[in-house]
Amino acid sequence: MFYENLNLELSSSLEDYLEAMYNLMLEDKRIRVKDIAISLDVKKPSVNNALTRLKEKGLITQEKYSDVILTTAGLEIAKFVKNRHSFFYDFLKNKLKVSEENANKDACAIEHVMSVETFNKFKEYCENCNPNK
Figure 1 (cartoon, rainbow, N blue to C red):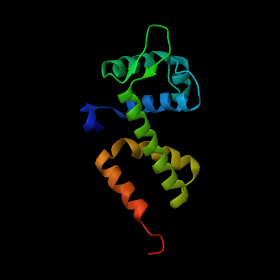
Figure 2: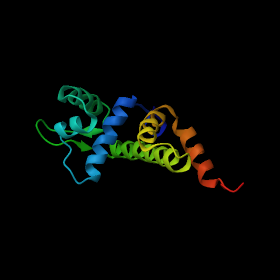
Figure 3: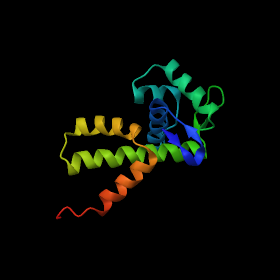
């Protein structure tokens, strides 16, 4: 996805890493390579590769053998990705009555393919919908 305000392109995989790190923050946990690996069910070398790319983009900082820290831009994107996921999960599960498993899986897929503009318009539309019409 392209983040126009940051002039930055991110793959869905890197978005997943940012979201996982943000979720660890919300759980008051340290952001460590092993915890990210567990959260995403990937190997530590995969996490290290992703962290290198996120560092290059200025979205995280990490000293050797220390915890990961989201930069301001990284935190902004992580919150946005989490918000998209939560919105689509809620929409699918509670409005369309999709099973929890499918709502989570489909929300994860949808969150990565919809542009920021389309997401904002879709969310605005849903918030203004009257279910009785």
